[in-house]
Length: 339
Image (cartoon, rainbow, N blue to C red; front, side):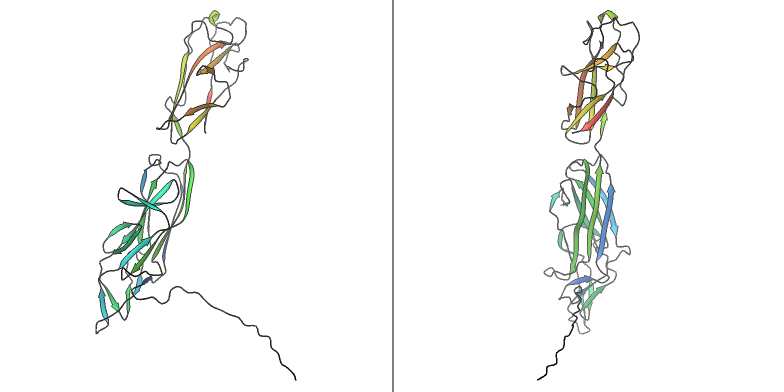
């Protein structure tokens, strides 16, 4: 008995489509979901970069044509198969946690940023902050042959976003992702599978640390006239009143600073050099010398982001020889780092 065998190669094909069939009272966009992707990379005003600071209308967007045409499955009852529906219900969702401040809902992007996201509701002509549920547009539309088609629909065709600072930003913070989704339906008890609009953010905010010095960028300290015989080796002159060296820093962040006083050392390395090799400048803070080019001079910032570096300064003799009368000068640069 002979047997005839076949090996068949069978290809399977398929396609997953959007929701072609709508259930009763569900709605969908005719031309596809209106996708809004708002992008920004840059800084923000220092006046806003503080807890509770708000940048109103930071983003404003629209669909281009100002419309988001939609269609809804409806039920006709009249003999001419035309029924009027007096409203459409709109629901906006978000995957983000949110909280309310001064009556406005803010969506949490991260520990530093939140946003108030608004969609336009047509016919009512108002912006509503997300999330919201079953908001009406109070506009009559016709159901013809089981479908309600609105080519001029403008709900969801524009929106805006406010940025709110939760925590002062130092450096950079980012958010990339979905912020909100808008749906429509003819009944408040019905959820539609397809959104009419979605909004995404691609956001990077850079705010470099900044401090200003009340005393300005150049400070002149007059050490006065000292009799040569009053100068002392490695210590303050006899009968000398130490001069003040006070710096006030106003910054845009919490934390503390580290100051390094940059300058050439004298022949005694704990003092700063001057134009006279026999004279050095001493800087004393809290009873200890601040040595040239050494880190570790911390300046804590208070609740107002203000810090103080208060020191005393005086001339010293750097050798045991007699110092000839003459003028002398010296200079120091201040390096400020954020700890």
